[in-house]
Length: 94
Image (cartoon, rainbow, N blue to C red):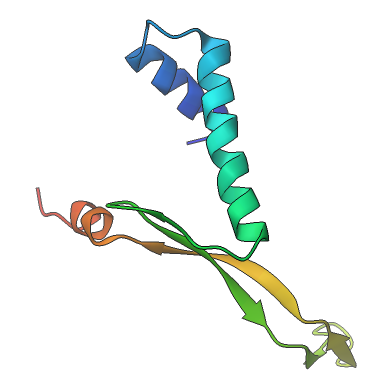
């Protein structure tokens, strides 16, 4: 599902809201999650999952094309761990 499909579905389920308001709500939620992660905070949505930031150390890597060694800088990466309720729903046998 794309962001525009999410906005469309939410607008259909909430006909009392204008499409532009639904777009603003979705944008705000994503912006707040992004801001919290950029500050190093964890974002937990009960029943859905948790977003956090993982730190990767600097290391020496290898260019797969040439075989040369290259220095890879330290970096921070977003990480998502599913919540128990989401895992259970995905694995329900129906």
